[in-house]
Image 1 (cartoon, rainbow, N blue to C red):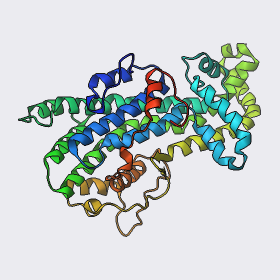
Image 2 (cartoon, one colour; image 1 turned 45 degrees about the horizontal axis):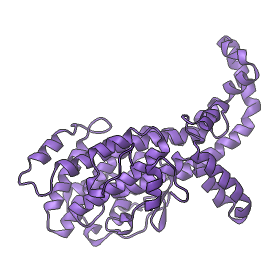
Image 3 (cartoon, rainbow, N blue to C red; image 1 turned 180 degrees about the vertical axis):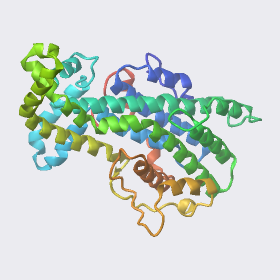
Image 4 (cartoon, helix red, strand yellow; image 1 turned 90 degrees about the vertical axis):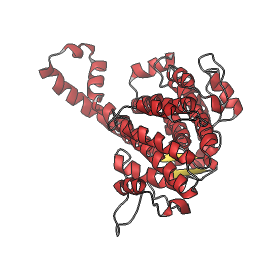
Length: 390
């Protein structure tokens, strides 16, 4: 159920479904619903357009990965990797941590979440990252998820004329992102051309070009949230001196700044040692969470070059516009083509990796797998975070 309404089949994922999901207040349940809806949109789109991934195919798994940060599970996974030899000792803590997370440790609408926020613990950075990723997850779905649902419902594949498509495209704003939707307009027009195209190579290139245009729009709009999440550890560290002083001397909040600032600096020095260690750990874990993408049967390390070969249809593209877009992010020969992103906050580095991923995995059937089991879907449809791996 979505807000009390039953889930429908993939081909019936409507704009109203999208709006109902957007209205969900709990960011954890909302993310699970977003991920599931992306998978339904991807399946419905594939049924219409045929073989090959569409943008929602990748969005499904990216949203599922984002859910781990939103739920605050990155720290636990980091510790499990670091303490691989001591999993028995870690297991009781892991069980408790998951229970706390799923009871809303970082969600301010819950009692435990309000307590965590009020205490200002070293976990503040993870809370800030969780909030930034949740907002980014919502921002993209609210816009692009809605447009996919509108396209599927307003542009019937057997329409006798192109008037519905023109009306759909005309509602997309001109101009470049973050405010304009030029790339979305171009992408959906290419999807429609691909649907009518018979040459397999041309079809593949049109699909990848459309996917990349939507990906570029998405990544441009996400830039503020990505930077905010990656800088969460430093943002909370800067605030430590003020917090510590006001905890020791509550009246310090009313001091004149000429006295207050030196006092904050002195108290901050005393508390900085422990906070630096916590901030280093937070930065390491948060960055690491952004640098992996779990796909069915495989985990991609986004800081490492993706060596998977391109399918023949995409190995030497003949589409001039695809070639032009690829040239924006691929190095010029004889420079080595290493798509591993050293800094995920850099838009060009992210897009370079995405170019390789979208080309290499375009025909991967594994990506079409459902992200959740029926039992898990039934659980979060009732507003309950499922047990197990989600």
